[in-house]
Image (cartoon, rainbow, N blue to C red; front, side, top):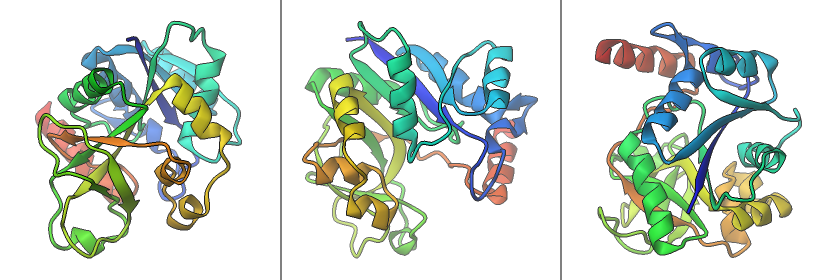
Amino acid sequence: MKTLVIIPSRLKATRLPGKPLLKINGLSMITHVFKTAERANIGEVVVATEDKEIFDDVKQNGGQAILTKKKHNTGTDRIHEAFEMMDNSNIDLIMNLQGDEPLMNIDDIKNLNSQMIKNNSFLGTLGSNTLNKNDYSNENIVKVETRKELDNLNFPEANCFKRKALNNQNIYHHLGIYCYQKDTLRKFVSYKQSHNEIKNKLEQLRALDNQININVALAKSSPIGVDTKEDFVAIKKIMEYKS
């Protein structure tokens, strides 16, 4: 099966505007993300953006980019537009990798891709076993509840995704990465945003509300997503130290 990685990115983030072009070790954050995806070596990598500045930055740093429309409700709608603009006849899977997680583990990207192929799943994502007791009530940390306890080999279905959890029974930190069969991606974007999705601000609930199963693989690590200036400062320190 052939996989295409699409990274949605835009400058108008509410909490940290312009974050894809913030520099770490001399390169923009979006460049770090697409280079991580390229190192995973699971397929072609493309950045989907509404902003010419991001498009130009990716191109200047040796990556591929597609300019999309500006009005999209979610990143998934944006990657779908980019996918349909490409020659996609030989593509089986689309990996949606977030543009604000430059520390996503390459092995986790590879594992999600291989689990999708091995299990012929419609839609897959990742969960990590890194929650502490304060995280269960923290609404900024999205949780996934799975039908079975996650291990390194299995790929169980998700029961639900939530912002608050009352217990820790099969509850994991949800990572913002998805892998779709192409027909599943088309089906997903054809549905209107569901009540649960809008209420909880979690687009994956649109899939569950429309009986699209989501399988979950265990991630080795839980990368920091960059939502605030504090997040950026923290991730910059980590990446500069590693280099």
